[in-house]
Length: 115
Image (cartoon, rainbow, N blue to C red; front, side, top):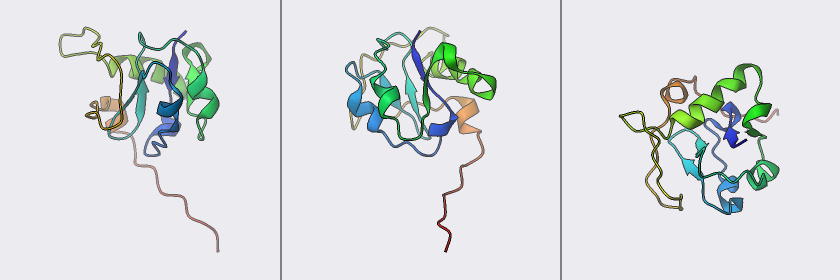
């Protein structure tokens, strides 16, 4: 089962996950990162390092987060519906287009410290 990135990444985009991926299958969008479903080798390195616990194996996504199985896959489909195989992400690469459901997601408010 490939790994997916869930809503906890939206508007956070820490990016440490990209440094641990041995196959560079985590791509950056405007508002979150996405894991390419066929490039992922399911090693789990990204899951163990994610500071916001946004990464799951696709069969572990439940409830509202289960739609991110589809969202991560659809983020890599081209206009004809075929899956795009970009061949690996690198820092400085063009951003991929956010999935429409992510683009429409309510903006996360910045955390404030109690004083």
